[in-house]
Amino acid sequence: MGKLFKICDLGLRFTFFLFGELRIIGFENIPKNKSFITVSNHLSIIDPALCASAVGKESKFLAKKELFRFPFNIFLKFYGAFPLNRGKINLAAINWAKDQLNSQDNSLLIFPEGTRSKNLKLQKGFNGAALIAIDTESIILPISISGSEKCTHFLQFLFPKMSVNIKIGEPFMINSLPLVKDKKLYENITGEIMQRISNLLPEKYKNGDIENIKQFKHTRNI
Image (cartoon, rainbow, N blue to C red):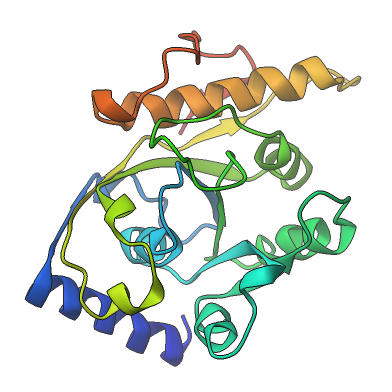
């Protein structure tokens, strides 16, 4: 964990101690001494920092390239962000994301929804997390965030007058996959990822359009 990240994380926790409230449940579910992919719902610009703080690791993540403007680009790089050109095929971003999982004790943060939810409810996920998890044989750690939507600009990092709850779910892996991997397979795995996030969310953040999915036969808890 880099020293700059430690400083930023301590600063974040201190400002929440002074001005807000941050509750994290499920520390026991965080894999020890292993790299993993953290998947979460997305409500606010403060979510990457909160997710990193929750898992206790410097979480590398992808952020839209429009955010990488001075001085915010400095802050994003402290938190391990990589610019993503949304709407196009991003082979460089995908390869960068995979490289982050080569470390023995690292966390790659992915928001499967692809962007912040405008109505606070969990949206349908994209298949990127499933694809990277399969290609790297990585552990997936689902977490949920509620309350962070009150943060609408970067200055609120200094005065987070909000109550945020984070729940960390059981980690799981994708295994025993067929030789032929089609779009339906990735969609099924993404569906379970979203369901596991949904199971951790308060009722007001759930989405009734995301159907209940039984545990997919190609995943297992660890």
